[in-house]
Image 1 (cartoon, rainbow, N blue to C red):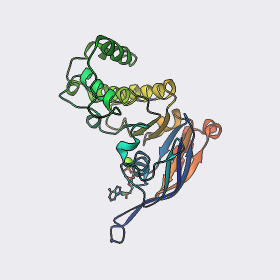
Image 2 (image 1 turned 180 degrees about the horizontal axis):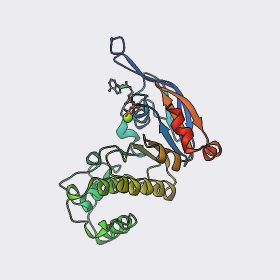
Image 3 (image 1 turned 120 degrees about the vertical axis):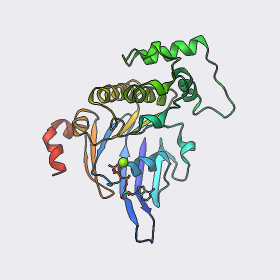
Image 4 (image 1 turned 180 degrees about the vertical axis):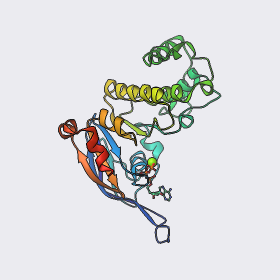
Length: 249
Ligand SMILES: Nc1ncnc2c1ncn2[C@@H]1O[C@H](COP(=O)(O)OP(=O)(O)OP(=O)(O)O)[C@@H](O)[C@H]1O
Ligand SMILES: [Mg+2]
C-alpha cells in the first residue's frame, strides 16, 4: 500500500543549517498493516509522514501508494488515499461550526469542487450512529459548535471524520500528546477500532511507549533520519515493554 524507495529529505540544503531529516529510507507497508513509529525528537518521524501525505516532497527517492507513483503529486492530489490526525486537537476541525457541519465538510473533502451535501435526515442519522460508537454521549450534541468540546472529545471526532470517505491510509502524528490519560485512551482505542473496521493501513507516531507496545502489528524506530529497527508482528509479540525503554537507553 505504501512503498518508499531510497527516500531522502534535506532541509536548507547548502546552508549552515542544513538538516538531513530523512536519510535513505526504504519501507514497504502492506495493506491493512498498523505500523508504530518511535524515535527521539528530531529523528524524522513527522517528516516521514509528510513525505507520505505529500505535504513535503522528497529531495530524492520515490513514494508509491497503492502501486501508483505519487512522488511528485501534491498533498490534495493524494487526499483520496489519506486521512491525517495531528497532535493539536484544534487543527482537524472548524471551531465555530457545529459537529454536524464539521462532518458535512469532512464528507466533502475528496468530492469534486462545487458539489454540496445537504444535511438530510439520513445524513444526520448516519453521523449520530458513527458518533455513538465513541461512547462519549456526543451524538446528542451534534448541533453544538465543535469548539465547545474538550480536546479529547474533539480529537475523537476528528478521527471519526477523517475516515468518513473511502480513504485507505490513516496517518496519526502524536494524536494523544495534548490529551489527559483518559481522553488519550479513548482516542487510541477509537483509532485502533477504525483501523480494523475500515481495514486501514495505519501509521502511528508516538512518544508513548506503552501505546507503542500495546497497539499496532509492527514497530519501527528512527534515529537521525534512518530506520534502525523494523520489528514484524511475530517479533513484536515477543517484545517486552521494557525492551522498548531500552531502545532509548
Ligand atoms: N520545514 C523544515 N525546515 C527546516 N528543518 C526542518 C523542517 N521540518 C523538519 N525539520 C528538521 O528536520 C529534522 C526532523 O524533524 P521532524 O519534525 O521530522 O522530527 P520528529 O521525529 O517528528 O521529532 P518530534 O518527536 O520532536 O516531533 C529536525 O532536525 C527538524 O528541525
Ligand atoms: Mg514530529
